[in-house]
Amino acid sequence: MIRVLLVDDQAIVRAGFRVILDMADGIEVVGEAADGPAAVELAARLAPDVVCMDVRMPGGDGLAATRGILDRARERGIRPPEILIITTFDLDDYVFGALEAGAAGFVLKDTDPDDLVDAVRRLATGQGMVDRTVTRRVMAEFARRRPPEGADPDALGLLTAREADIVRLLAEGMSNAEIAERLFIETSTVKSHLTRAMAKIGTRDRLQTVVWAYRTGVARP
Image 1 (tube, rainbow, N blue to C red):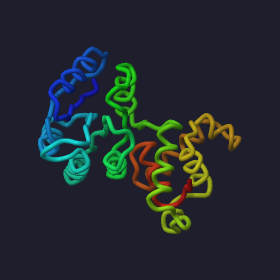
Image 2: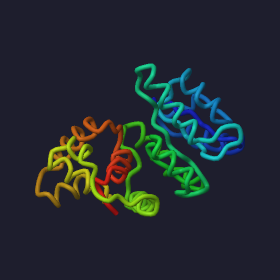
Image 3: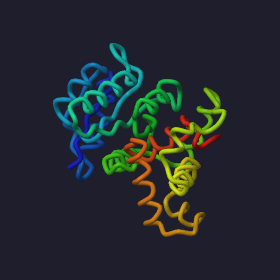
Image 4: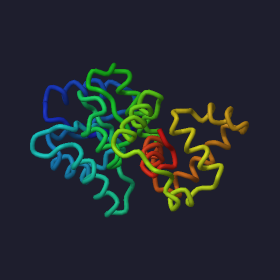
């Protein structure tokens, strides 16, 4: 059972998400919070698998809450929940900041109910939300904010040449199968290399790996 915490300052939004998620097989909404500080406390107490997080809330935004939830989990030595940003603002500074802080993906509030359920399931299995649309936005935002002069040698030194190639292709929005075809290797080999690369750089999912790649200059827009 996937345990979900809903965080949004609007009760009607939380109610709508609860109906959608509680109707889905294998998903249970275990709690709700109306602001960031409450979300941090509930996440620590309820240990959800996924937190559906609004980013703009009075009394504490989702960016600070994302950092707080992940930091507290690390301090306690437990696996942190996956943070799914749900917003009306597309990839604005709040959403992008949350991705940098460790969120695993984002969807818009007007997303199709089936897509919301799929996003929760994907995050719960550690896949993150990586598709070409999201990746292009991440690339464009990094290019706008601080285009790298070159790859950070310390970051690049963490990876083998093959791992670095796979991370770069992932950052272009490729699936494991597409990477395997490009590099003439098996899909299972791509998965193994990517798993080792993520362990070395300390990322928990594919989206955070993409964010790391652009932040360090290992991948470039």
